[in-house]
Amino acid sequence: MDFIQVDPQARQHVALIQLNRPKELNALNLQLMSELRDALRQLDEEEHVRTIVITGNERAFAAGADIKQMAGKTAIDMLNVDQFATWDQIRKTKKPVIAAVSGFALGGGCELAMTCDMIIASETALFGQPEIKIGVMPGAGGTQRLTKAIGKAKAMEMVLTGKFMTAADAEKHGLINRVVPVELFLEEALELATQVAQMSPVAARLAKEAVNRAFETQLDEGLHFERKNFYLCFASEDQTEGMNAFVEKRKPAFKGR
Ligand code: HXC
Image (tube, rainbow, N blue to C red):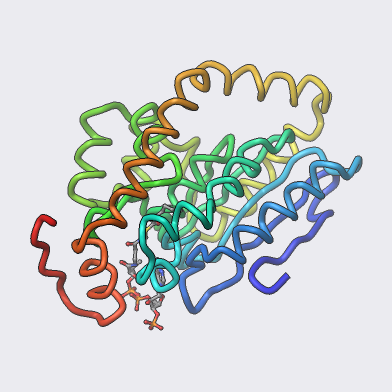
């Protein structure tokens, strides 16, 4: 594993996965996501593990999908890579997964946190879907999960302006479970994971499935729709311009084509 670290026994019955590309603010490249999928699959099978915590570091949970890896891609490249198959497998983890978020949780990073079952945030956490600023849109569930979590008005504003939401506001609007001081965010998540790990693993699995079912029947269709539009963004010059501008550290000039 190059980009994540796994501790299968961080606490009794609790495993910890740390995203580990600190210099790139844990940007989620394809290899990292595959490693994460494999680790979750393995922990899901290990009997002594009952709950899983995913974290980053103090500065960043994850600043999104790896823009440098996507910058030169066409819509068909994106379709063929089919990275969302990996995301779907992550979403299907049976054991409860808790995200411990500090710093940036942006784009795919915010989407990864929302894919988890609960979110504990440090007071420095910032949530956002800034894809619009690089000429694309959320592609890993952002338009669906964020909207369901915080409602249309706030989600629309975040998705259309790229504006970040603070941890305090995220708690106020129901995106996360709670905010704690930065030095405590991981501890608090591990503590919550330990609490859940004391319950019946069978009941926890079934209850998780049932809570997710409350919105998943419509989610599948929404995700499908979102994906098509995300791929379509890669047919635009604005996507090339937006991502190249990021890589070249300049302001993008969008043209609407
Ligand atoms: C690749 C990234 C990155 C990303 C940061 N880096 N985010 N590389 N992909 N998403 C890299 C930077 O290029 C830089 O490396 C290093 O991490 C530190 O970042 P800085 O920009 O120097 O830090 P700072 O000035 O503190 O700004 C932090 C930031 C900014 C506000 C988070 O990095 C930023 O805007 N990042 C992009 C956020 C974003 O647009 N996310 C959505 C991506 S699209 P170098 O080597 O240059 O110094 C997406 C689609 C998801 O997620 C759907 C499909 C899964």
